[in-house]
Image 1 (cartoon, rainbow over the protein chains, first blue to last red):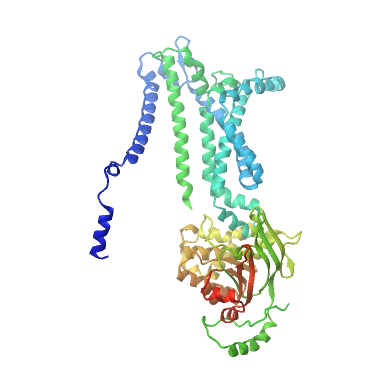
Image 2 (cartoon, each protein chain N blue to C red; image 1 turned 90 degrees about the vertical axis):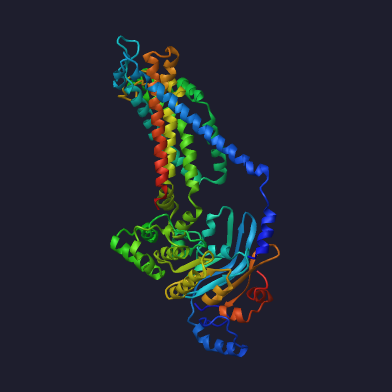
Amino acid sequence: MSTSTLTAASRLLGRPRFLDRLDLPRRLVTAAAGSMVLIVTLMLGFVAWNGIQIFLTPGSNAGSVFSTAWQPLANPASFGLLPFVTGTLAVTMLAVAISTPLSVGLALFLAEVAPVWARAVVQPALEIFVGIPSVVYGWLGITILVPWLRENFSGVGFTVGFSWLAGSLVLTVMILPTITSIAYDAFRAVPGDLRAASLALGTTRWQTIRHVLLPASAAGVLTAVILGMTRAAGEALAVQMVIGNRPTMPTGLTQPLSTLTSQITLDMGNTVAGEPWNQALWTMSLVLLLIAVGFVLLVRWLNGRRQTF
Amino acid sequence: MTADLGGVAAPLKASGSRSSLGQLAAARRATLAEDEALVTKMEATSLNVSYAGRTVVRDVSFPVISNQVTAIIGPSGSGKSSVLRCFNRMNELIPKAVVSGSVRLDDEDIYASGVQVVEVRRRVGLVFQRPNPFPMSIYENVAYGPRRLGERNRARLDEIVERSIRQAALWEEVSDDLRRKSGLALSGGQQQRLCIARVLATEPEVILMDEPASALDPIATLQIEELMRELIEKYTIVIVTHNMQEAARASDHTVFMSMGTDRAGYLVERGPTRQLFSMPTHKLTEDYITGRFG
């Protein structure tokens, strides 16, 4: 390039104008991102600080936190959180175990089998499902599911109907659209090229799903399941309405249980800030938060593994 | 079955030959006897293809000669790929695609009721325009087809994989890393040869190639062309290309398609590549191969 063209170019470009130099859009989005990080950090810090208070307060019987006895009104009071932690895990795992095959099957149907019109009906239906408030699920559970269990299955132990199974079934329905839509996206994200390549080799649709689609989308489907798990573990209201709220270690499906979330919603109005019972609820929040963080880290780890090949 | 060729079947020598009419006629007489030995492997008859009611291919008929390369050339939108995909029923994957007419494979209509589409695609493989290896190791990519056909014997799989990759002229470049290296980690040209190896592993009779070199650099393109010339020893090849030189260099027969006023593709002219390129009978063909349009 000759010198004269260079000068011409620099004359054309000129000095950046004031507004350009200010670079407002960059500053705005940076501020937005910064405040988001700040808010999350403050929340985490706040919950963590309050969550450890019970261990810092003399005479709060903090050692009982790791026991199975939840007796906040007894003397001496005992704040065993194990029934809630195991309750949360039990209810969540059962819900995910029931929901996963259903959701992944539905997602596969939508992504690979369904005719266009069926997809056009089911997809908006799923979105509506996600938008239904949890109190509606809880209400349906308490007016239909719980009486149904009590009236038909009292012989096998559902004497009150409120139970581990009732909680898990309500959650199953609640997380079904979550898992389905994310798994569906994971299936759709598999390039059509790969499907076509497999089919062009003379494989059947099922072989293509089994050997190309599922391996290629495995990480995405796992992400869907874990996000469903996160939603199940975090759900408070609907679970509290049908689970029976009895702080015992889970031993059977017919048994009323309590979970971290259901117990927090149940007790938070009864406690006074600063007393050990209130502090124990904060500790429960912290544990819940840690479970959620654990799930998120799991998702990130899985996504990181996605591109092994 | 004797092929309806209407011309010479002499293998292509140098491209851009300027043989006189007389020379060509002599060549034609000399090879008429060879004509008798030619076998039609596949044949399209009155093929029509429409997508969602819009006709994209109208009344296309041509034979595909066994152990030769047939090139389908023509401008964009002339329905070349649509025709190609009729040969192993891949059009069925496109919603609202309708195919009428017949495509015969060894005298059997592959669109007849009772014909298993899976069987058709095993006998007629397809190499796509863009290389599309599976996100698996090189080995697993090639072993994919045989595995789905039920091959479990490790020794036999090893053998099929090595033979296929060798046939695809890729062995020297990948043999060290067969199981560790992902098919996606190869270069574009290598990926395309891997895709060819993947098709070869299922031992098809016909290999369809949909602009296999369009995403490749000139050297990789030449490698693919050389490969095709080697593969016709055992296979029959149909290739779609928009590259005149490629068709002229690598094919024995050429089918020239163009687009009608209603935007439906139709067959303008077909014949032995050498004849079609040196003495096109249609003005349109001449314009196209000389680069005046398309």
